[in-house]
Amino acid sequence: MQFSRMEKLGFGVLVTAWVVWGTNKIGDTLVHANEPEKMGFEVAVADQGDAQDAAPKEAEKPVMELIATADPKAGAKVFKKCTACHSAEAGAKHKIGPNLWEIVGRGQGKADGFNYSGTLAGLGGTWSIEELNKFLDNPKEYAPGNKMTFRGIPKNADRAALLVYLESLK
Image (cartoon, rainbow, N blue to C red; front, side, top):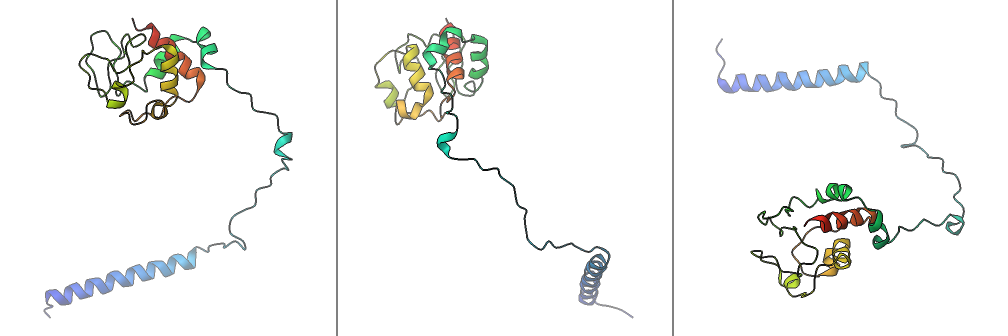
């Protein structure tokens, strides 16, 4: 007896569906799922009391106090976040951002051969430790409209170490 291609295809689909259905039925028979009465579980939490009773969180020391004891090696580690966009070697080419060699004392928006955004080019000040601290805390707040996409360095200790490292780039 000869079967056409359509008959063979139809028979193959039918056998496949029957095997899948049969496997499902056999699996349901062999494995029983234990459905919980209530979904999830309860987490016991001790009474926290009033928020006023809690000990006040110790505030971070200001960056300018931390600079005295900051380690430039720790700053070099923090700087690794910056290396995707900035170089920090004497004579190195600019990347997406300017080369930061001798950044402390340089004019804001003034690096030979780098095209700054209008916002940074128009600042007109000098990159002192204090100004770099403000900028690195929140670049978008310090210079709204600048091209730098980095959100800043929120930890004062990390920022202090980075500032000491940047100051050492001479």
